[in-house]
Length: 158
Image (tube, rainbow, N blue to C red; front, side, top):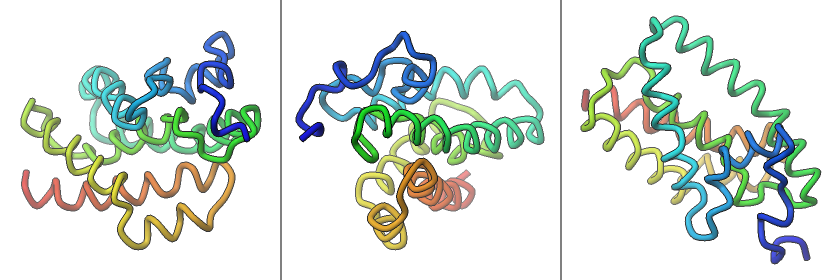
């Protein structure tokens, strides 16, 4: 089964779609690739945080829509639905989690922990989506829902 094949043999960083899908290589780290994918989102978010909120929202929506294609193609190429190395969904999820939040080391830390909490534990309906919705849309959707759950709590805290 392809799930047992090391990620670096399934994904090629020379392929632009794979490069994005595996979070610029962060998803190829064998242990906790989703966590490292979320960490890879931080410098991108710091750069994007200089945008006005409306532009950041547009960018995040574009990343999510584009992510459906990226995740779908990478999963199809690897022959594994939602392979752990595919972390573009975590990058987008972290962007969503931080929308409208003033960027500080404290907000980044809390956002990171909340998003990872929801993404790892997958409370309802995240787990239901993860199990039942397939393809690139499914790969993206469970993280988007986890991100909105984290975002709601972020707005209560910050």
